[in-house]
Structures are given as C-alpha cells and as structure tokens.
Image 1 (cartoon, rainbow, N blue to C red):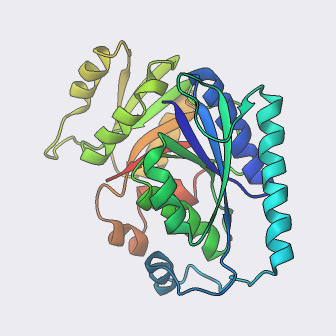
Image 2: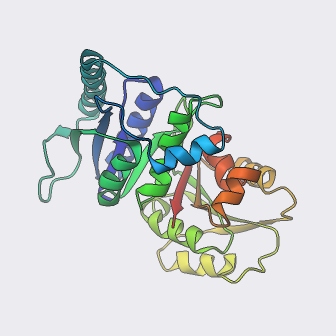
Length: 288
C-alpha cells in the first residue's frame, strides 16, 4: 500500500480519520492524499445513487446552496486541517507524487457530486479512510460512505466518529466464503502481515460454494501470516461477530461488502449495512 485517500472537511470526524490515516501511512511508508469536494455553484441534477437513497427514505433534504464565499471558507478550513496534521506527522507537502518518495501529503479539490469524487479519485488509490456517519446523520453523510464503497473500486476503511487508539494490530476477518470477502483479504494483506494477531470468524456452517476458513488459514500461511479460526452457530451473525471481536481483542474487521444481495440488505438490513452505519467497530471493506 502506497496511497491512502481521505475526503476532508473541517469537521471533528474528519480530523480523527486524518490522524489515523497519517499514522497508518507512517507505518506502511505510504502517502496520503486529502481531497475536498467543493459543491457546484448551481444546483445539478441528483446522482443516481442519491435517487436510490431517496427511494428508501435516507435523505432528509439537507442539500443547501452555499455562497461562493462560504464555499471558499470551507475549502480553506479543510486544507488548513489537512496540512496541519500532515506537518505534525512530519510528512512532506507536495503537489504531485515524487518517484521513489514516500510519506508525502498531497492536497487537491474537486467540484461535483460524491460519486464523481470516488469514481475519479478512488480507483487510483490503494484505499480510502472515512469516519462512520452518526446514527441520525443526513442522507448526504450516508451517501458519502456508500459512494466510497460502491464507486471507488477499492477498499474503504470506516472508522468510528471519535476515532480509535489503534487500527490493524489485531485483525478479525469476517469470512463467509464469498468472492468479496476474498478480495477484501487480498487487499488487506499489507495490514495482515504487520498484525500481531489475525482471527478468522465464520458464522454458521460453511456450506456455500467457496473456500472454507481452513483454506484461508493455509493461504495466509504462504504470506507469513499466522491465524486462528473461530466458528459460531450463525443464529445471530451481528452479535456473534461482535462477541468474537471483543474476545479476540481485535481493533479492525476485514470483510466483503454486499456479498449477498445489496437491495435485500438495504430493505431488510444486513451485515454490510450494520457495519457501515450501526457498528462501533473499525472495518476494512471491499465491494465487487
């Protein structure tokens, strides 16, 4: 991992995400890109993702037009936050990547919609770091997280609002034999090889068409990663995963996103939706 993307606004939760991003980047000898999204001066048509959210009552209409001065003030404050944290971690501020140079901090701004940000910036980074929306956040905050997961094409790390002391020292892999979970594990390998402990949790019988947790243990061995398996009954996956997380002393969950059926999860609730919006556990998630 050499590139971490962090969407930035002058908000406390962004500060927590930035601090963790620079800490992880320091450990991985990676660089951090801060991106601030400037709203369009004129109201544009809603994105398809926003329309989807409105259908399910997730948007409260909190979409305000801002004056040019307000937009500039917010951008300046966001950049000040980013550069301040970068300097405090001794990262070099540069305009663009330097060949062979690590631990750099880059800043840029983009005008447009949320899905535009992640469709353009997401694919050319290793993963993004965001803070989890508050329980009663606006539809825009929810859309922001969904856009990162669905449109970036890369993993997303979601952190609690108030931040955490450590992330990735003790990792819990939520394993359900899916392609999405396998891709999440592969993407997380730079974190897994540095972890002090790795636990693989499979909830319920492993009777799907896909590799069992024992096969994952063997795969990780080839990367020099020692792991242990924990199997639960699968009666209440959310509670069982949470209990395993606590018992194993984990500080990060690695899992696939929407590995079953996204529409069904949105309507009836599911593990991805729970981890994105209702859990306090840091999660590293891969979709598609």
